[in-house]
Image (cartoon, rainbow, N blue to C red; front, side):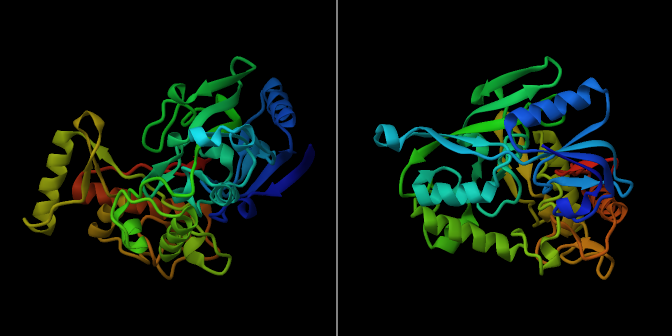
Length: 361
């Protein structure tokens, strides 16, 4: 366990903003992670858990407390090929919270573990993925997570949650919106297969030149996803400011039937009777629509805000980017402008996906 003082946080986040942490403790094992969190809690000091920094916007003033940085490592196959279970289609793999997510996906593809290939190129660490139920291109981690082992800060004990107890929904879980649980490791149940899960995203299917529902070699699926993400500026690149972001800044809204009807009516009034917003059915009669479409049609196109230091990506309207020299205040001001503009135009209020520390939209 390593302790440092007055550590700048900007360099530890993909948005590249944020002031210093009064104190930072780096935990390299699960025991160290639990001990570091317990120490801060026992002292009744402010605590910020820092994972990969890919879904975090920290205030310019920094964090007036202790930041515990997750740097745990370990990938262990608990059941699968080595015990002859691959023929039954299942491989159980326990992954420490501090393992790089995309490196895990790359290994899964190489090993013939199907189920996360469409989640290639997503920055961050494995322990953060169940918190917001990371998803892209028709896959979510909820589809492969068997269990999540956590430290319960309230009850002061280790607790393991089976998939059904994680309360996974779209970009949400029982771990999101609360600081009660610290993810220690995640057990994934992959399918032992050379082919991907059925392709469930139209653009991805088009890029692979296959029909929706087709299965393709895992490596082909990964490369196609990475190509899609690069076109959208969603693969980190030190030389490309379009990637200096938190990825999608807003989640796709999910509306009730009446809410969607009202929204569609406003869209027709604003854009013309022939315009029908993109929409997909959700459980309970609800309807999902596209945040990117809303942002664009409200007048905030690709590159909106340039040449200011904070602007929308020139490749994707969902990404608020730091063009170099932006402050956290700049980032939040732009996000607030976009959110409020969409609500004024269509009556739909966008919800931010990144965690804001010391900031509010």
